[in-house]
Length: 635
Ligand code: GLA
Image 1 (cartoon, rainbow, N blue to C red):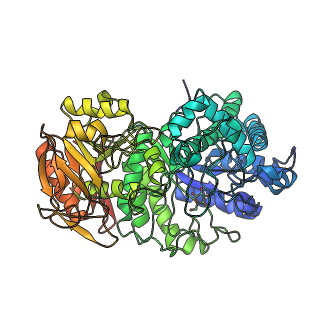
Image 2 (image 1 turned 90 degrees about the vertical axis):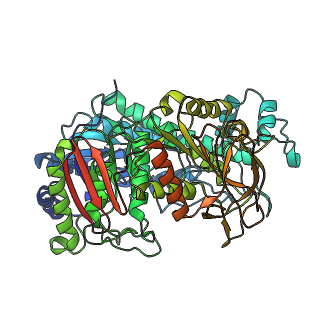
Image 3 (image 1 turned 30 degrees about the vertical axis):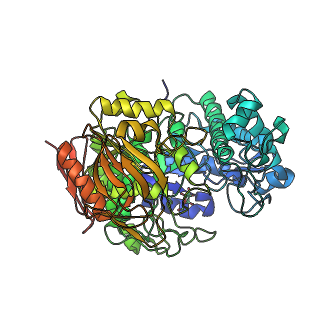
């Protein structure tokens, strides 16, 4: 049995005491107690202050601060400090630094400056994790381990020669021989056929206007994900050797445009799921994106509680315009995460830095100190979490709607040479989710490849742009539907198999062509800024297609544009499955999902700017029109 997350609502954030003098540490303890902080994440970027030269460790300051926190009743989420290697390491071993797509070796000075396939980085990070686990594994202040930090945030892919060697070994395990690889990647195209493993390179930049082989590029994303996971597993298993009591995790990045890792795979390897989420200030309804990411994270956690490891008290420092949070917005954000399954609310960071590139990023203790608006809000949130502490360990109520979210389809759809560069996997998934949110319909996220039995927990399963679909996964969707479930399937679903080879005989394979009964003949992307109108009054953009129904019932056709007269919206002969052939606008999506909710008699709670979520014995309600939060017993 692996250790579980302690059943407690956590409150606190990243704590970087090495940026401050001892007198500030004492003030920190007082303020943390005042705000109700019970957990801090220590040492995330401390490698250079803990290992000052190769093999020379200085743990004195960390001993002291962990002791001080313990005396003050504050627990520690101890990071392994391996997120950013120190200068001495990469100066002595320049090959540890990553190489980009264009072949340039990057420099030390930012963060995460390491190649994900570097054996030197792996050995040195493992050594540091061992030292920390040995020294602090049994310290009573330590509650959990925080391996590295936001893996792959800045260095998701490396194109160096060391990576090339690891890549070939990875490929030899995936493909039993070179001929199998040639077949999978379709290398007879453009003279790409390989005659020896040594000829296979990372998919580096190619002559202008051409791109590396798409199947190869997709495999390189899979390889990179596995290399990073291997680094995590190395540190995790080393820590486990010294500490079998405290849970070990790492913080994921649940962000709308972050697709670096396949978190469905990662979730199996952490003792509990932890994630970071930041609002995009330019998005006026960014609380819906927050809800999407929180629900997705709960999906990774299999419905169990998870932990919001970072969010911000107010503005960040890395967007074009860093807009602060409105009064009440922080509380609304934090409690939305808690309602959707987080066992607490943690922030980046405790005290706002005065130097370095994050000095204008908000924190729990801002530059202006205790007289600030933010500090007032921080104390208020601490008090609310105290009132809600009985929620710890409880689960958010299961939804009636499930959405399949697939990082690997996203990777395949992030490449060039698709029918249109305007199509966006996360945007379509968010469009559908937004409509459901506004209608008060709650969503659980499920992994691609879920079995028909797993899907049968839901009345309806959504598959927006599930581009890669292998035969087994396709069959699971068909079986789920045949057993009485309802599917909603979008355009550009089921186009290719797992090696990104197109399925023939009507786009969408047997799911769309045979099961749903829609024959998609040819794609007709819509020009930028133009719209297509549908015969039922709806409208869409970006995509249309030449399509007809075979067994399906046509609900709407295009009344203008290139695909005039073609099927735009259809329902399968069973009357339970929907096919959506364009990117519907917001009003049309709401119309579609409202009729689906009525037909399937789905429960609607809240809506129109108000979210209502049941967790534990409570019904939490968050009104984003006013930023007011409330809760009552859920009877
Ligand atoms: C990420 C990192 C933090 C910090 C924040 C700023 O989440 O993990 O160290 O840089 O971004 O938003």
